[in-house]
Structure formats: C-alpha cells, structure tokens
Image (cartoon, rainbow, N blue to C red; front, side, top):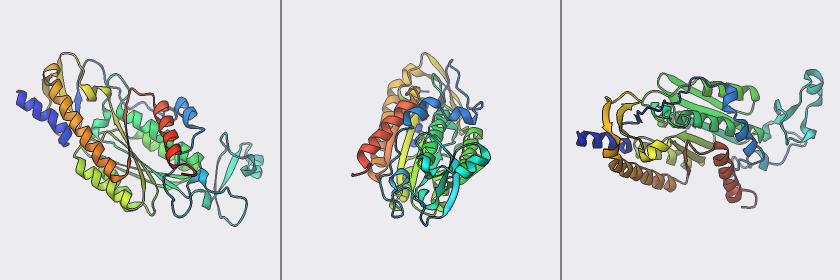
Length: 333
C-alpha cells in the first residue's frame, strides 16, 4: 500500500495526476460567480493608481501610458470607452456626453498598441480550495482586475482558455463591450478535465498576430517540459510573459489531520484512502522538488514567475508585483 501511495503522490510532480486531498472542510465551488464579483473593489483600489509596465518595446512604441498622448493629429479614431478617474478631461467626447449624459474617452489607433493576453488554466485541478477560495476563482479574479487595468491604460486585451468541451479565444481589443464579453467567459467557465494550460498557449501562439504581453494563470501541475517549451516559443517571438503560479496552502504541506480519500479532480485515476501523516514527508519532498525544478526552468526562459498561495490577499500580491515591475522596467530603465 505505501508504495502505491508514494507513486500516487509523486505522480503530482510528474504530471500524471492533479489531486484533491479530500477532507472535512468543503471545497469552495466556482459556480456562483457574477461579473461584478470578479472586479474586486479592494484589488481595483490597490492597483488603480499603478502602471502595468511592459518590459520591452512593442511594435516600435511603448505600451499604454508610456506612449505620447494623442493630441488630435492624424491618428485614426478607434472607439470610445467609459471615463475612469485619472483620465485627462481634454480627451472626453463632449458631443457624446450631450447625447448620453455619461462621460466617454476617445480612443485612437495609436493609443491601443500593446496587446495583452490573458491565459487561464481550466483543468480540473484548478477547482481545489479548502480553507480559501478555489485556485480558479483566485485566478479569474486576478485576470479580470489586470485586464481592466490594461484597458484603463488604453491597451488591448484578449483571452485564451481551452478546456474540456470548450474553446474560448477572444482577439485583443480595447473596447469596453469586449471587456464585458471577456468577463462573461471568465464567469461562465468551470474548471474540469485533464487538459492543462498548454492547449490555451498553443491556440494563442497560432492566432496572435504580433508580440505583446502574455499573462498566464495556472497551478503549473503536469510535466514541466511541455509548459517550458511553449514559454520559450513565446519569448523567442518577443513576447513579455508572466506566469502566475497559483496554489492552495494545503498543497504545499499536506498539513491535514488523520486520513482521507484522495480524489483525482481530472478523473483519470481511481480514488484511494490515504493516511496523511504517514506520507506527509515524502509528499513534501516530492512537491518541493517539483517547485524547484519548475522555477529554475521558467527562470531560464526569461519569463516572470510569481508563486501565489490562495491565502494571500490578492490586492497585496498584485500591487507589490506591479510596483516591482515599475521599478525594474519603468521609464528611464
């Protein structure tokens, strides 16, 4: 029995299984979320005054707030978007205000240069959450808030999510109506099946037309090599890539009382009864080795790699990361 359990636990690092460690604490299900829930006011407030700085030049110009502001020259009009605090009043379309009694900002083609891409892992392992929200709920809230920040900077945002029985791809656009569609997809999608984030990255690589900013949310379970190969491909094409690895606290330590049933959330392996105390040390060693190997391989690609546990306040995580990017890649660097 112990050999079977050790093989089962070690398979987490090899990628043959993403497991739920079943315990008396109920899993937080991800089926009652609305689009408003994704736009967490605390998160939006904490990052609203920050810049999402791209580390590289994109198509010869800087992204969003780093490009020269349109002054009514020869740039082609693109669209309107709702006014948000911090926008310059001179960019308000007063004629549209007179018709709708709401403030809108004019957008021009040269103001929507950076393409930001949101990639969210929809595999079954993202369902996991015991004392906290599920990894998927954490990921899609972060994705929605960062997407909104990019749009506020006059950048475009797209979405790629491929999973069991679904294929979602939204081209990058700067329109507020497009953002609402993106939120709806994030809200309506549920994590299931064995397909990891690699399928979403493949779709993005095939369909994106120019380099941009790729923001990945995943627990990064599975074989390391397929993921790293795709990250290398994106970086070779000149993309700025960020990997937010989201994990539950219990996955780090297996600090659970007694025993319980281990269930494969991706339904590829049979369940089994496990004595948590008996396998804890072997599990922790295997998990830590996986994390070390993964971190080293991602570092070699030149991608940013941020490990987050779902008990960390999302507002703090994102604001600290954006401040770090500003200091490293901001103007004058």
